[in-house]
Length: 364
Image (cartoon, rainbow, N blue to C red):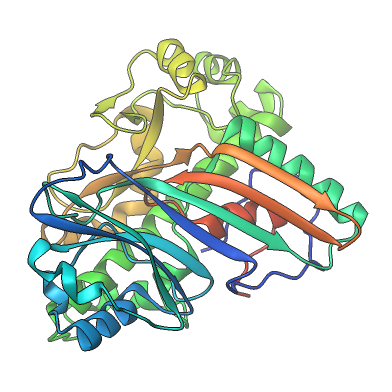
């Protein structure tokens, strides 16, 4: 998938980024405050250079607890330093009293009424340091950060979703077609989700490209290029935000709530600009609400190849456009460092935001 960026500066090719424990830090934000009492022991842990699964294996070996007995909100990458919350029944609390490992530190512990389940997080706070940054590049980075902090960012799936070779989505399609037999059901579902993610990214790239048209061309040129009627072009052109909403789009209350069809463009545009709603893209599958009208035309163009597989996938939606919170950035010229802190909702990738800022793909 060829990413379409919404920022318009030249690519920043010469800065150095490494997902090490000093330059890439992820801090999980829990969905709720822990009560301090209850049946479940809550661990706030910090790990470096380990996946969540590798950390759980270490806890299992040292503390004698089965991995399946742990609760966690999400899986964290191996690279960098990450903090997250785990839960385990309080009967196992004593097993952690003398725990020690060079790559894992228990920061604190408490209790709660419920086990932590997948998805039980608000989001993640990220720290990223870019090194060998020249002042001319720092100016580009600052401008991009300011734009994202004000307007948000296209919520693509990150390269991590597609595997080292980037072909997980193709393997998922082959599994759906029956060309590839995958006996491991979890792996099969993961590959199929990569295929859903690839289609979503293609659709989002198309929508970002269309939004850029409205920045670059006049209404007459847009009418010729898009083949849409004059009134629709005029109405969409009047939207003040970069990412254009179309009639018939699936919208979703942000960051939580229900999906609904956009019928009143001016009303939903105002709510979008207030960060109360966002457009939601289709994750191909059955029983998911589908777009209508102009929005459906673009959706059909991208997702037509998957129509024959819909009954083999669980359909859903994903925010097409998300908003970073508490965005801070500073250029430390004496060290040639550019540092950023920002908070993203769950399911968003910091590397996607970084790619938008650098205007280049990190996996190339």
